[in-house]
Amino acid sequence: MSVSDKSNKGCMLCPRKCGADRKAGRTGFCGVTDKIKIARAALHFWEEPCISGKEGSGAVFFSGCTLRCVFCQNREISVGAKGCEVSIDKLVDIFFDLQEQGANNINLVTAGQFAPAVAEAIGQYKAKCVEMGFVPLPFVYNTSSYEDVETLKLFDGLVDVYLPDLKYLDDSRAEKYSKAADYPDVAKKAIAEMVRQVGELSFDERGMIKKGVIVRHLVLPLGTREAERVISYLYDTYGDNIMISIMSQYTPLSGVEEKFSELGRRITKREYEKVVKYATDLGVTNAFIQERKVAKESFIPDFNQSF
Image (cartoon, rainbow, N blue to C red; front, top):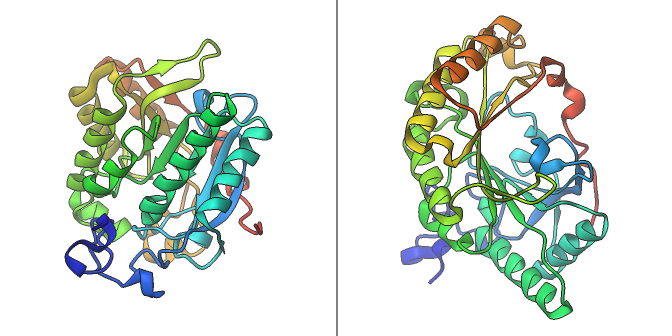
């Protein structure tokens, strides 16, 4: 029996365990059925340098999400409204198309709600690459970290690079901003599983990542103390075995300040520099930092593709 229908309770893929009968066409908390639904597949140039490189990352944006982050830049698709349903075979074709376009890797953005089917597609793609006599692209699993460990195990040996968030360590902030008070505990366990699967960082001769985990933290307005807690936890737990990406790109979207006044502005230069200095003083060297100019809505992709 698959992870998605343990004990005939319906979908149990994510920590919500909502039990929706997604196979029968009903939607779960994630907003989608079990049919793969994607909103965009294209070269993406705005990931960390060792992922995008000059050629771009082959990003596949999946519809639906298990969180409800009030500041989500991809909210057009995170509730499952936008996107096109595709078969496993079509998804494999999309992987090959991105490879032909020169992608450095295949970047799976928020794919957990379709985990069994996506894992099957990765396996088919890699097997076909072997048959054709060439090396498959690395797979990047780009996630909020609100993941069930048993579901993540479906990707063991298939995913090469994990790109998880660690959004919060404070339960109240997790509930307030993402409707998931259990996020900190869930995310810690998920990241531990990711590190177990792919091990230490490894790069090719161009500096592109081949294996490993890069954990992202988006610094929010008035969020420097939480950012410091996150960085301290990651460094104390994993040291230099992972990379930490300290993100300054928070962009206030229309309407968010009506309920969350503190989120109605970008972070200040002083806030971001305070967090970076904390990481440096702690001894963190495996890290990415951003220029503040990246905080703009032009980095939100167009989700109007058809397949």
